[in-house]
Image 1 (cartoon, one colour):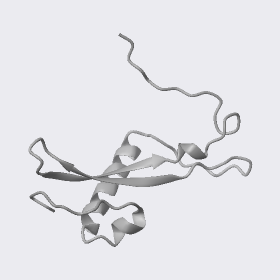
Image 2 (spheres, helix red, strand yellow):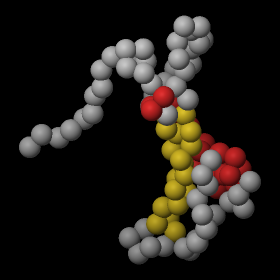
Image 3 (spheres, one colour):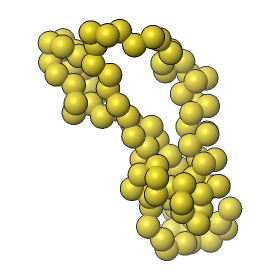
Length: 101
């Protein structure tokens, strides 16, 4: 694991992450994200209905730095490709939590 600021490009895809010199660090970050999603019961595994669209996902990678700009940790997030959804087919309404003052 890095202990100081590193200047390198963050992976743009899973394929980039697994061939990166920091492969083990990215794999650990992905495992942490996966474990968090499972422990928070974000999804449940089902058989795919033949008449339903499956929304794909992708990994997003960031190198986090502390307030002094020093390396803090590798962060991986699994995000849905929501732009592939079609209103009335994949969803009927949208919701965005907004604070009202």
